[in-house]
Image (cartoon, rainbow, N blue to C red):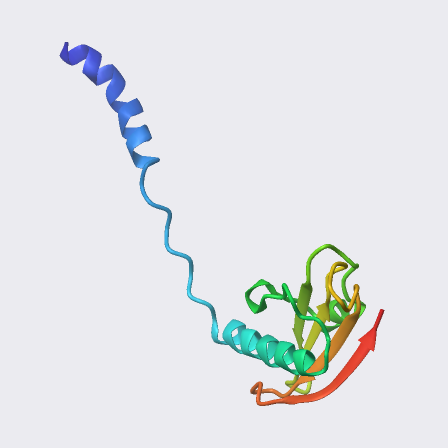
Length: 126
């Protein structure tokens, strides 16, 4: 009997280790936190200008390089947000509304002040 248990022990140990809870996600860095604040400021500014931000979620923003942000994103079924830190320390937040929104796939390029204390400009494209 002990010989049978000895044969199964490694398998049972492997299975038991697979049942451990996943590790906790890493806390966001200071730059990620500042980027999320900048996205929130941009979305608030756009909503005050009748740009449909319905379905846009600041937590889903992707941090990219400025060139990629300026290139924008293709139109899609969901709101897309790109954010980049510019050389002058301001944030460039690009928001592409969804095809089902009242802004129908429009894109806004929002320049947010370095500490996310406000917006300095908004450009709209299709």
